[in-house]
Length: 283
Image 1 (cartoon, rainbow, N blue to C red):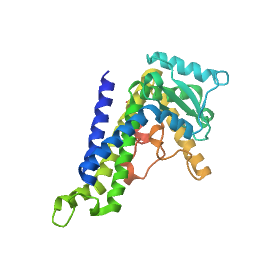
Image 2 (tube, rainbow, N blue to C red):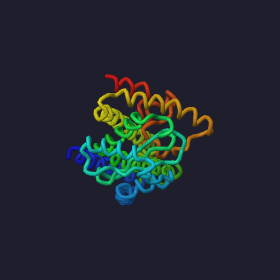
Image 3 (cartoon, rainbow, N blue to C red):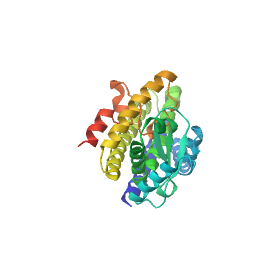
Image 4 (spheres, rainbow, N blue to C red):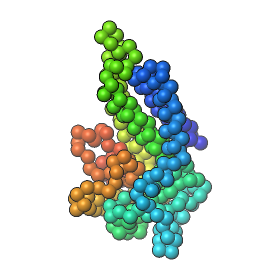
């Protein structure tokens, strides 16, 4: 219940921030438009985000006979996590070893693993990865991250409008009204940075929580430590061979592992570094 309350509060706060940015860009009309946008974003994020992301990666339901051991492991972990239902299991046909969970709540959850993950990891490490994803399901992280990402995208979109429209979009944004200039600068510079920082900070904290939950379900953090280390090495090699990743930047925050980022952009990363996660798992 506490996680549901937190989810609802976060949705409200992000919606208010979006409306506030909209009011700066377009006055009362802008606020009303952004309020409507926030309602539409939240509606579609809540009901359709899982279907969209699964379709975008051409994920298919895992055959119960071909992947019997995977279904059995997921069922055992879901029961240990005391989830109301066993999440659906999907296979993503890409070579990069990775996984994500999606779905609006624990009763409508999906765990998707790539074929590359199944090829690269032994069974116990695959189980540790699924335990991590069940941590996201258990804590309603999927709903939180999906809506925060949608709101952040909307704010970036408004920032782009303000940047190209300049002072003509702002109500009162003329030479005699410094508040209009300040508002324009806020929308163009500070609002998108704030949105990205909030999204990144929330995502990183949820990754730590999911790692801890994997350690709890597996009885040891070493399974996930080994899995993350193996994923990291294989991911970099495959991405280099493919000359790019098959994982879209717009959904990279959903996956258990995100490729290394430049130090200067570490603050905007949606995942802690591999070293930080390993240190946390071994505490």
